[in-house]
Amino acid sequence: MKIVDYIYIIESINDIYMKDGWQFEMYETNSKHKTNNFEKICIQIEKVKLLNDVVSANFEYRKKFLKNVSVIREQLPKNLKNKRKFNSKYNYGYRIYFLDDGEIRYNEILRQTVEIEYDTGYTIDIGSRIAEFINIEEFIYRIKSYEKYYFEEKKEIDNGEYTIVVDPELAGLLIHELVGHSFEYDVWLGSEYLQKVLIPGKKTTSKQINIMDNPQYYNGYGSYQYDDEGNKAFTTHLIKDGVVAEFLRSMEYANDVYKSCNARRLTVSEEPLVRMSNTYMRPGNDSIDSIFRNCRKIKCTI
Image (cartoon, rainbow, N blue to C red):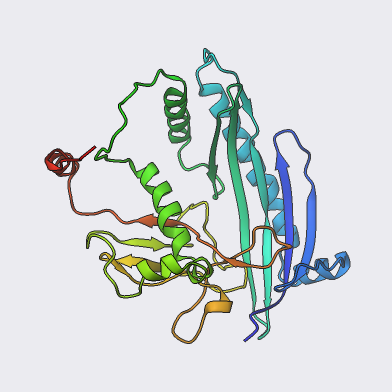
């Protein structure tokens, strides 16, 4: 079944140095061809009563964003040796999906990013997908922590093999790169190696490991209500109790058993690909003390 006839995009793209600029676009589903029919787009948007609401919401959200950025800038230490350059970016709008059964679905797009560039070449990029940063103090704490790590003198360690414990942020990065991409079905199909090691129903790691992809995660940077083919978002369990459970799919790879909600467009003018949303590992039952205690029992060979 064809899910979407057309996708309409209405967005306001700004940063703290730019003026508001509205962008109206319409694309045929699964086509790179943009339809330049401004009048038709506006009529369709008015049918779902969005046009005035979008403009009003954009104004209010942007005021909050600029206020939050100002607070963050003021509360960061002023005596940093390396100069900070703020490239804070803000993007608000809607993607509207017209389904072939007459239903209209739409995603509210809100991306707010505090990007700080240093004269050493380092860049910090922290974002939010809701109207306000949940906790400005947390943003400031994270920026200070990054700066301390980047600019403090590092201890040298010998080459070798070590048992390590990673924090949740690094764990999330590893899950994204090592697990998430491997479970994107088009990537999996294109790799003989992955097909040999990631076999549905086969145990692949500790039974304490549970990894999922969840587009509905609150304030996740990959969150959405519908994917870019108009499919309603749901959680996909990639690894369940250490066993390979399910893969991420688009309509091209979906069927009666395996549904799709991971069709993502790199840009609105490109065809959707199978890609992650928010991929993460659920907490286990071990305490922090027991994790470190078990690490001391493990001997590594160099």
